[in-house]
Length: 287
Ligand code: FPP
Ligand code: MG
Image (tube, rainbow, N blue to C red):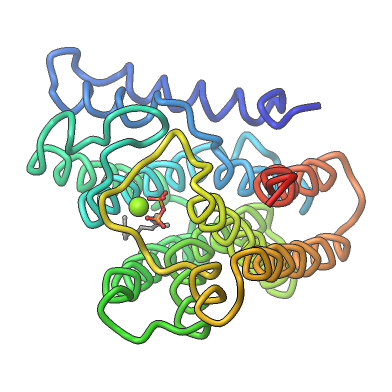
C-alpha cells in the first residue's frame, strides 16, 4: 500500500478542499489558497497527527481539524520560506510570491496562520501549546538558517537549525495527535520524540538531494548550508555523501525504536511506512 492510498490521506485532502471551497469565489485569497494548497504535497505532518491519535486508541474523526491546522501552518511556513530564500519553484509550480507578488504572498501566509489558530483552538491546552511552540521553533530555526551563510556554520548549528525549522512541527504533530486521544504525558513525549527524529532524518535527506542536485520540483536562489556541505569541507564528495546517508539511517533507527514502544496496530504500521517513505526510500541508489 502506498501512502497516497491511506484513507487518512484522502480525508485530509477532502477536508482541505472543503475548507477552500467554502470561501467566497471572488476572493483573491481563495485563488492563492487554491494555488498553494492544491499543488499536491505529501500531507505527511497531518498524517502523522491523525495516525498518532489512532495508535493511542483515539477517534481519528476528532483529529481532522487539528490535522488541517498543521497543514495550514506548514503551508504558511513554506510561503514565508520562499520569500526568505528566494524560492521560485515549489512543488513544481511558481512559488506564491512569484505568482501573486510579495505583499499578497505575505498576507496569504498571515491568513493561513490565523485560520490554523481558529482550527486548533478548541483542542485544549496541551494541543494548543504544542501548536504554538511549533510555530515559535520554526521561526527560530529559520532565523538560524538565514544567518547560516554569513557565519561559521558547524554541524552543531546545522542540527539545531533543522531540529527547530523542520523537526519541531513533525514532533508537535505527533504529540498533538496523542493528546487528542487523551493519552498519558509519557506517551505524548514519546510521540514527540518520534516526530522529531523523523523530521530530522527528512530534512537531512532533503538537503542531500539538493546537494546532489536531484530536486526537480523546487528551486531557490539562495541556498542554506547543509550537512553534506559541512562534511565536504574536510572529506571528499563521496565520503561526505556516505556520512550524510549514515546520519539519515541513524535518525530513522531512533524514530523506529520509539515507534516500536507503542502497541502494534495498522496505524502504527502506517507510521513505519511514512518514516521510510520520506527518508530512506528517497535516498539515491548511486552516489
Ligand atoms: C524549508 O526549508 C522551510 C522550513 C522547514 C521552515 C520555514 C519556517 C519559517 C519561514 C517560519 C514560519 C513560521 C510560522 C509560524 C509559519 P528549506 O529552504 O531548507 O527547504 P525547501 O527546499 O523546501 O525550501
Ligand atoms: Mg527554501
